[in-house]
Image (cartoon, rainbow, N blue to C red; front, top):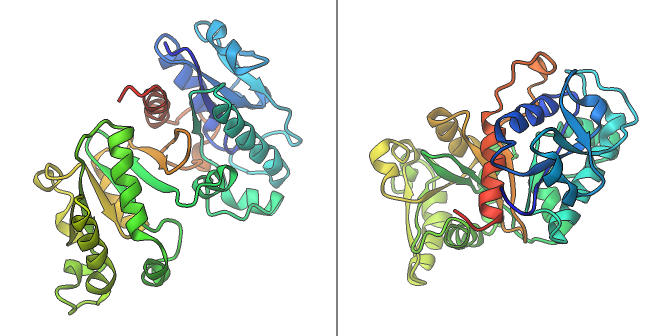
Length: 323
């Protein structure tokens, strides 16, 4: 068991987060060390938990109860119905978790899913999601979302924007920096000495020499050429429809996709439960399960904890430099 714990934030109380925290503790209490940050009243009925005063207290509690750093939320939870009145407290917990990892009181942070509209309605949350907010808190200029499973590691260059806006976004985002951060993170976090990266095209068949669009030639190809000149093992732009079968995946350590679904469809198809979201480009390790709040099954005891378990284990491994 690690000497310092992982901070697990509660996310949206009306979702499946509290159930996942308890199920993860039941599976991991003998091998991992973490504490949950949230309102104990939101935990499932009969859950074994113990309130702690500080992260350092988690180790002595973990074997027999879920360590809980308690917060009093203003609104009682109604599973399946997010309350904007709880938004500010959810945000405050995220801020506190960043403080814990920044001060070395926690080895990493793992975030359970938030409900973005509830945060926007209740606290004016002006960020597309966790990734951008955490980057703001620590002053990171270019956060990068890496989705990782035993079958595939993939980065979406653009994330939570309409598909119609992707071509315009690619002109203005720093694709070179995204690829570089991914390359360096694979070396530092995953101990891959010489990472091989495959970059997808935007259009069908990577544009087919401009027949199906010019973005692949005008935007993506020059970035790849520049990185190759710097000695990085980067190839592409590849046709996205042939990048993710078994033989193709064996030729690279991570793929860079141009938009959200281009990246997430293959990894969720290959291994829906074990996918973990890792934010690269931050000064600390942050992971999260690769799913949402699942409001439709919240409070029913049906949620699978596999992705949360993998996210906590990944946070611990990366935070301790053990991957």
